[in-house]
Length: 247
Ligand code: BTN
Image (cartoon, rainbow, N blue to C red; front, side, top):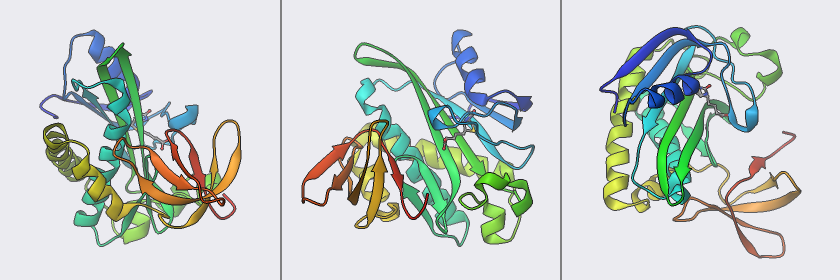
């Protein structure tokens, strides 16, 4: 991972650059990093604010020999990697909000966007996008999300060296990913459980179709979220949003 790193000052989205590089024949482990994205993409087609030199805006090209159903495990694995990096590099306590948000002090500090191309039972490639708010001050976080987003600098009261963090993330990712390919998801699941946010607590869950209250139980070995509804029934979810408080 990261033997080939492309660094850009400004791009639309590092995700799009990876999709192009795949067409040009670049392979597994190619990394694209940008100082600034003018069309940063979040999940659910939301925009992702990616101001100049404020954060880590990075995409990895992965070509695992796995069936498409295992792609969500790679998202969870990446969340674990980011949580471990924040826990080891800072004095902060990161938590993972299923499936792919990293929170510090209940506010979002990083997000993951997994885009996959698959054919029948085989993943062709995955573009793994990682966005981390690093050196933002309060004022540089857009006002409409200030109540729920934060940065490493805001939480730790110091600035962070972006290239150093990128190296640490790539190394940790490589180790965790190899271990996952070798030994399966169990090792990731155990680490995930250390960081899982609101596990055992009541939250509101929503899908495109409905919204309901439930208690978070944990994650399953396939990466699904396990929940319990008020009538005591357990339910596995593969795609949903978790809310709490007035969010
Ligand atoms: C989310 O939480 O909604 C996911 C955010 C992912 C943002 C990253 S930044 C690098 C890569 N390029 C993009 O356009 N998006 C991802």
